[in-house]
Length: 450
Image 1: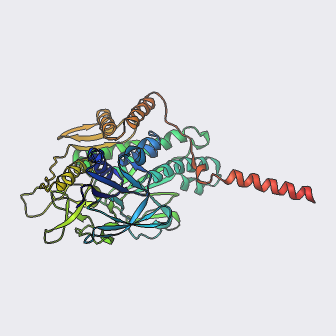
Image 2 (image 1 turned 180 degrees about the vertical axis):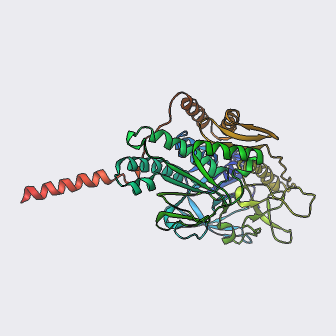
Image 3 (image 1 turned 90 degrees about the vertical axis):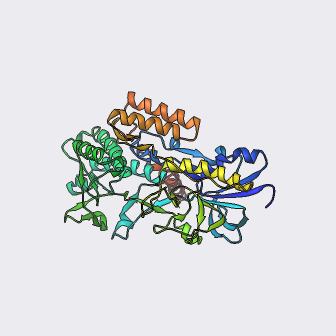
């Protein structure tokens, strides 16, 4: 190993970002060099996506630019195509279409997760996920556009379809998303007198017997009551069987024609983990030991390979016969990343790695209207106090001081003023006005010539 070891981090999400940041002092001291491979130019702080969809948080305020925040590292815009764990090499496909071989001393798998989709008829064509900034922004614009369409059309069936919004998956992400978007839509509909006599249909479909299970049974029941009081229909022990042509068919036999079908039924580890030949657990996570080292089925360590965050299966201390693992959430990703940076530097000095230990601080959920649910060290909160705690935590967890200031300023502004209801869906076709101008110019030139 050279004096300046090369640490390759695959993934610039929350976990990968914090591993890279934790190595910044070692980079400045000349001990290591760090390369981060990530196709997106920014980190997305995913807990804020429901607020982005609801218009309470501006999209850019839920992101951190990688190049600016990780100046000590080499940030490559691209994706890893192959990793040879024995030869300690990787092949990266960069944004300019070139495949670059990279050698490393240590590789960190921080590829995160993707939406856990199912082969339901029509879902690929009609559904939209809720796991990226782009999806959140799209849904905000889409909901506003559907309401504007409903206010314009004279076709009762088309209006009802446009005003029907179906969400599949009642985990806290799905609950936060439908709560925020429902509030956005409620305020938008109030601006159209023509819709005063027409009701919206907001439907949350959950296969289990309760929603927002992450916050515990009492707060789950409170959440269910809160959503229903707002006019959101919640169907428990129900599944979507099909949504072909935008007609949602449920296991209870009901059908719901809709232009908006949101799939928020969980996530799964990045499929790249298995593609790279990394040892995996039963659900496709990189198999790691308590020190975040990638391990084979026999427990032996894969030299120089580490895993962290949503794509890692990190065992918890357990006295029972059944193993348990840390859940994939932001608080574990941050603390695992900090520990991994420490263990990487220790490995350069042949020091034994430290095990990951963390007692959960609790769970937070924000439901719009300054309402939320939270469990903090066993203490249950609901309503405005939970919403306030949620905001404080996420402001502190955002890894950028400028973004923290913008977030807090935005939340304070939302208390004093109504949320922005402007749709920006026209950005999807930015060249249309220019094409129309060119068409008019050509028609004018043709007419003048004749």
